[in-house]
Length: 271
Image (tube, rainbow, N blue to C red; front, top):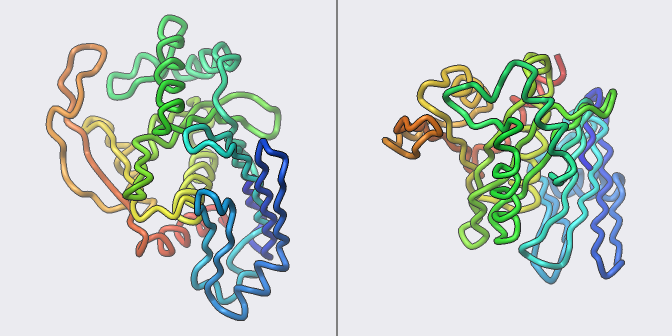
């Protein structure tokens, strides 16, 4: 559970829980003390899978992080992860079938399912939408989330890790959509910070990818504001539901760029 607060002090608590009931807790002070003395901190999460959380170059964590806490729950299976990430205003919880109707209602806010440059579920397509997400989760290539507004527990969208490549330590963040009424809030920024932090500092990724329709100028601009680099246009990358051959814009953030991107996101949230 990542918590992002007022950017005045660092508080990191990491719990890794396995279905075998073994529990590891690392306190905020352990991380702060280690980081202040070494400038580089590596925290083992799951020795059997060699998963680590790394915090690099944070010489003054009290000013760099807000009240940041994490609870990461995972099974010992490499193909089945139950992960919850929590920010100040949003909570990313594991996508479940029982979220179907709430997601449909969220998509009605802005009539998102009618957009031509993305795929957002409606009453008729929610079943297939969930089937695709869970099939990828079973294969170990997708970790899907439901986005919940913390203030009232309302479902406001969805996002996911997908194209997860554990060998080459690559992943894509995509299939992200938010109800129209919350799109101009800090929620999307918080979602991206939570996901990117997990990708680079827990999964230890060397590259995180983003893809958007060339027609979706708003999305492309938002991705660039994360600090991502434009890599090119993939022509006829997919066929959209209306039959259009979509050209997709490809962006990425690599590991050496992560600290700069993180600073950008933290700065946005501190305003």
